[in-house]
Length: 105
Image (cartoon, rainbow, N blue to C red):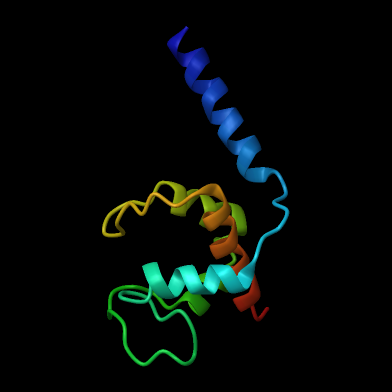
């Protein structure tokens, strides 16, 4: 029974992440990234400094293994060394939209 419940939860989570998001705002996502992420990541070309260890957003955005769904799932439940930010679904969607805007290929 426990495995069944875990399977249902995982399937529901995957379905939720796969659903299209409406009203995603890349500009709002950029503002959130500037507030939450720019201490460690270079979030745009105008930024001068960030941590050496965290990849620039442009590199993450153009990594074929990192889809919008992947980024949204990561932001919802990040793993160390990233902090847990407790972002809302809308904030996550906006940051994911900003990543989409950064794609060059």
